[in-house]
Amino acid sequence: MPRGIITNKTPLQKRGNVVLQQHTLSLASAPSLELIAMSSNNQSFDKSVFEEIPESSCLPVARWRRYEGATKTYVLLRDPSDLEDLRKLGQRAAIWRNNQTLTYVSWGLRDIPRDGLNFLHCGFDDDDVRLYIVGSTHDAMAQTAAFFLSLVRSTSNFSCLLIANDTNSSPIDLSAAQSQCFLDVFEAIPSLHLRFENIYLSAAQSIALAMRPHPVTITIIDSILADGGTAFVNALQDRKSSFGSLTLQRMERQFTSEC
Image (cartoon, rainbow, N blue to C red; front, side, top):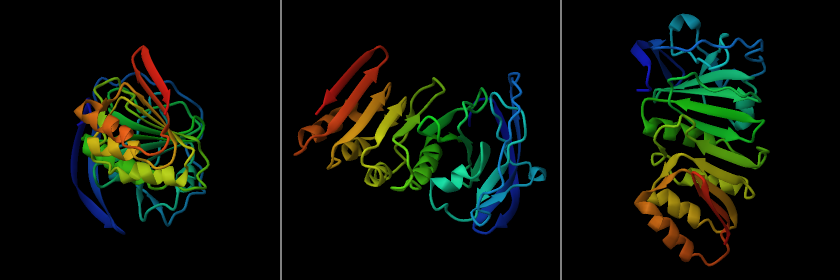
């Protein structure tokens, strides 16, 4: 459970393929928030994909660090077609999934979930969609990240994907995200710069990234590779073609190689 969150839940109702649960939520020692006069959402989203959860349902509320206004929360009635469906939610929104994760969705903003929440950050370029996944377990957050990464298409039009733990705590374990999700992203956008920060990658994930058949650009910062990176290094040595660009950085030390 993320630090500072107290939550109770009871079954509410089922909508489409989504089971909603009633929640009450409070944050301990919440900081004062800076008010920002900014519209939360536009109304062009696809209502066959998203259904807004009524405020009266008392589901977890997205609480931003710098914004005190209302943020609409949605459930998915079906899988979105691509990232464009998320962009249409507007500047601020949230998506609740049955694995008990609440994903904060922002577009073109420099705001994050409020203090006390541990989250996994998936950012698609600096000025594009940013996802902040709040969950009670690393597995749940990783699975939700993999779900949203599956929405990347060749037409998604971004050049850098950041997967990070921005909360300065121990690395978030991505092992529950199947390795294929990273390969599918590279398949859609071969020129992508994939950047990990404060993340734990399994040996299987490391091998999959190292054995990508075409040149890639990967940056790994303040992260942990299972088995000390042995599987990753061995897979690199077994390659028959150029890897591309690999940057490994730990605190003030950095190693970059074109290999």
